[in-house]
Structure formats: C-alpha cells, structure tokens
Length: 179
Image (tube, rainbow, N blue to C red; front, top):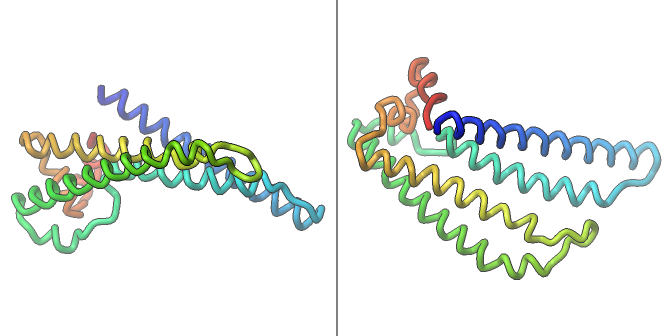
C-alpha cells in the first residue's frame, strides 16, 4: 500500500513537471513569436494560465503530504509532545473542515462552470475550476488520515517533531518516509 502511495505521488510530481514544461514552452514560444514575427498565439496565453491553476492545486496536494504548508512553527516548537499533538489535531480538523467547504463550493459552482467556455480555446471552465474537487479530496484525505493516526496513537515522534518544525538530520530523513 505504501509503495502504491509513493508511486501515486511520484506520478503527481511528474505531471507537475510536464505541466510546467508545457507552460514554459507555450510562453517562450509566444514571446519568440511576438518579438521575432510580430504575432502571437492567444491559445498559448489562455492554456498557460489554465495549466498554472492546475500546477498550483496539484502541487498543494503534494506539499500537503510532505507537511510543508505554512505553519506557525515558532509557537508549536515551544510546546511539549501533548501540546504539539493537540495543535496537530486542531490543525487537521480545521484543514478537513476547509476541504469540505471547498469541495461543496466547487460542487455548487460545477453546473455554472460547465456552461461557461473559455473565450479562445472554447474549453469548458469546469476543466479549469474542477481541480477543486481533486485538491479538496486529496488534501482532506491526507489530513483526515493523519488525524486518524493521531487519535489512535499511531503517529510517530518524528512526525510530531516534523509538524513542530524540528527537522534535524534524522527527523528530515524520517519525514521523507512519512505517509
């Protein structure tokens, strides 16, 4: 199961790299066309914006798995184990709640977005904003599983230390192996 998870997230990282490469090629190609041939492709401008949205939201899921989102580590690091665990649980509860709200909002907007089309590419805007489904489910599942492990006592000390921002050499290695 762990290998499958690692492969899935490695696949997401590859997708992000491919999307970034496509964005770069489209923008670079458009710059060359504008300055050398005094023309451009409107399609590349629109698609690169859409790909940027996808890169951002897919990247948010990958970063959530690595517990690398912004946090108030200067406060949490001062607490003992129980204080850190309480902060982790509260934090993950808030994250799960926000993900539920985000999913519901994306769901309510889906019908509207499905009927609007991008001006140049004529792509349904659901393809652009539908990434909210993926990111809310992905981040919510990561937080919910960590919350489950925390409440059942299966959260390791290095994971708690990593949440608090204490990353010495050993904790950094263990953080890379975290689910």
